[in-house]
Length: 233
Image (tube, rainbow, N blue to C red; front, side, top):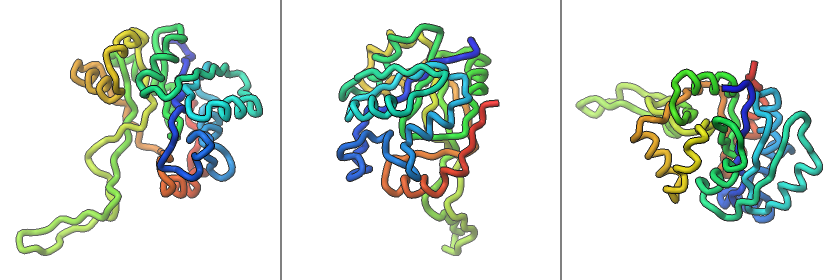
């Protein structure tokens, strides 16, 4: 695997759960402490091995063009691809067809994490599979109790980490999967196919993670964004 990598950044969604903020603004441009989510993502990854971003845009694509005209990236290439209102898997395929090389990253345009991209690539190379997905420990949004036979509460944990892992994006796909994507209408079905073929490996991340899907998550991101530090050494 080469020392640099290309990445597809999914930025085409409407972000309906963030309305009214997204009524005329693409979700990745919703600000966290005055800076767009997209800006935080790109700043965080500025020292990573990513050399070329393919922006899978759609909804309010003109705003994405405006953003990069005002804030061009230094030492990184950016290609904005109009993927319309296509499903995620078609957005990925439209961008992936433009990429040369053995593989590529796929990142969500609403998710930040202090993931070491270099270690992710090394993990993928070591396991020699067709795809790698980054997972994060699932945390219960509720307090959890254990109850004894007579109904007495025996233990209580406030929002504990569960023995399950959730998808936070940061995928790596082998380029040979691009043609296979044509067979699927939904990204979830494609991931399930990779699982059944035993070609998907899990890169476990236990550090910081921020996702902005709702107004509540945006409020939490405002409180936690300063704790997210780059980790690419």
